Image 1: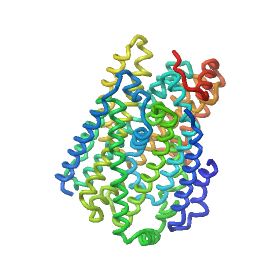
Image 2: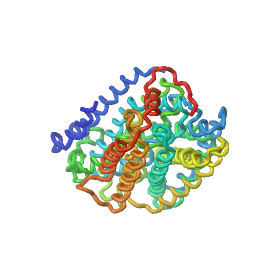
Image 3: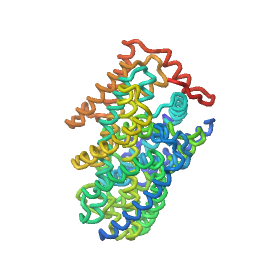
Image 4: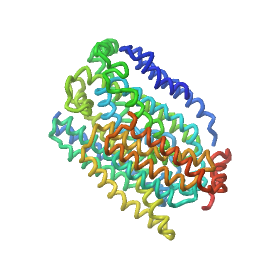
Amino acid sequence: MGVIIVLMYAVPYTLLRDIDAWYGSFLFWTASTLVVLGIVAILSFEWKD
Amino acid sequence: MDPLWIWTGVAIYVAVALLAAVASRSGGSGDMSDYFLGGRKMGGFVSAMSYSATTYSAFMMIGLAGLTYAGGVGALGFELLYLCGVVLILIFGPRFWRVGKTYGYVTPSEMLGHRYSSRAAGATTAIASCVFLIPYAAVQLAGVGYLLSGMSGGAISFTAGTTLAAGLALAFALIAGLRSVAWTDSLQSIIMVVSASLVVILVITQLGGLGSFFGDLAAEPGVLSVPGTGYFTFSTFLALTLPWVFFMISNPQVSQRLYTPASMRDMRRMLLGFMVFGFIYTMISVIWGLAAILEFDELSSPDQATPALLSSDLVPVPLAIIVMIGIMAAAVSTIDSIMLTLSSMVTRDVYRPAHRGATERTQLLLGRLVLPVIAGLAYWFAHLQLDLIAVLSVSASAGLLVMVPPTIGAFFWSRGTAAGVIVSVTVAGTLVLVLEYTGYLLLGQGSGVWGLIVSTALFVVVSLLTSARTQRAREFIAASRSRREPVPLPR
């Protein structure tokens, strides 16, 4: 997850900086977030009372 | 929009919310833990709604849409990175919850004071929280002021809006503490997410559908990329995002909620609900901002993006009124939570250590008396109308970042000391205040970046130079990691 979060800083300012379209930073940030939230949700199922 | 419509909507909201607040009073035991933490028996659904409403507020619906209008898609990255900061709950959620149950903490600064065996450390973090959170609450009040005046074309003044929000927040906090706050939060969250989603669907449909919407945005240079139009330089992006990534443990009105779920199962529901709401809220606010870019060439202030959109022909009047009330309620829900947290800190971490014999009843009375004082201070700040809402919010969060190293150290570094806490919070907090006041960008970086670096360095160095209470630290860390059912311990 840490790697994904670092990429959320790096990729839009490098690889995607010239892509002025929905499939650029908009899609990258949205998809990355969904992956991170999915992992968090799965890991939280280990919580026990 | 006709002010009569707006006042009618406000009146209906006030009546329904007050009923919910009064209904929430039943079953309370009336002690400090009950008033400020809902008796540590909050269910998962109400916790999720309330946690979301506390976090996402007028800042979100007004400020984030405004930030998108001003800087384009960078605002989406900024807010989604904040949402990704929720990963911290995997580490800190269970730990906060277990030590809260074990030692009976009411506030995060009470926890730090006990963990570092120092009332002064607890009081220092409590006072620092007040210094930075009151402007943050003021930002929410200003949000309501902008919203009502913007949508009514100035017929409802900024002052009327802020007065209304301050009065409601005070009432909700006073009626039944966290219970009434959480119930009104839940009511607001549900209405908000449904009505705001409808606005997004309507606006995009009227702008020609999703393909046409993004096609038009692509024709605006820099809107869908960073640094794009130049607003979101990497330094700006870093300075804005950093405080929000740590929001969950740096902001006491949020971390205090980690003490409230009845069980870990309820905490998981809180987490899942928050993630769903956070994602939807973010997308809604950003799409509003992007739509405003297409619809309005020159707004007097970027923070007018949402009011302008809601009062435009794109949104039917009844729906716009519902959303407007939802945003106002969102601001109120953040303000009342902050007021409640600060009140508990003043009572628990500043007053009680100086008056060891104070009963729960006296503490509770003082807590209620402090609430109007905090509301008054926030009201005063709101009327200074200092800056863009989003930027001012981040400034407040930047200051709270200085609490992150002592909080992490509490759970993971038994060598951390009270002197380390006091020096790091005081010096780094002052540095943030000076940088914010002067507007100086040291080496091009924002105050939050420096606050975190200096706070971390001072906490480590001063702790190593002073002696630690390792026995207390070991007990605390063991309690935070224990897999057994937490057993309350006397302190």
